[in-house]
Image 1 (tube, one colour):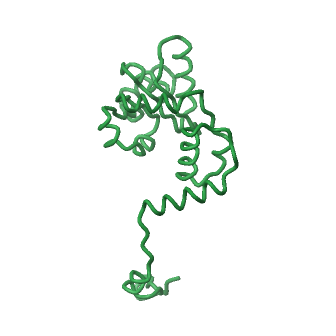
Image 2 (image 1 turned 180 degrees about the horizontal axis):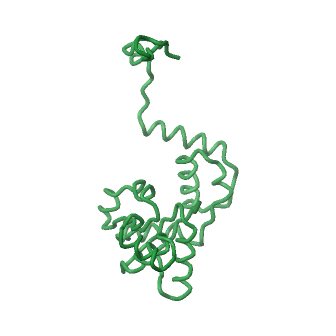
Image 3 (image 1 turned 60 degrees about the vertical axis):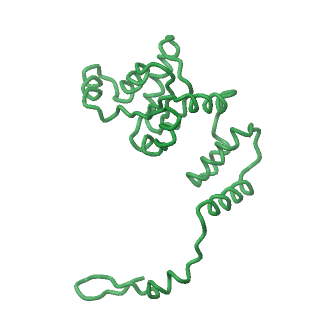
Length: 184
């Protein structure tokens, strides 16, 4: 803890910065990730995953530190291979949150010919949602469906986004490359 100094400012009571810096063990990021994955593999329950599914489960746990993903993720048959193929083919990814869009490596995706788009903050989406009495998430999914070509959806917040996607799929208006969904 710090000690009160003049003017209400706290002073650091830890060793001098130079000493802390010199005493710090520096580990390369890839070593940190390797160690983290070893811990995850040791701690997670056994499951009946394909190698691709296991990689996704481990990445979800690594990202969130939530081991519940080992028991509550659902994969459609063959979806991991289907998603890999779509990503390599330049898929467009539509999200329901700017946070999800921010979490996608746009440089890598662009290098594969893909892109990411979130329509949630678009003024025309908000206006249309208000006029129709539906959510911006539902309108955003409609906008994504209109993009054409291979489109995937990453839903991290809005259940109404998934409801609209299901409606469009069932009506034959949409055939997404894949859907990733963890609605709140």
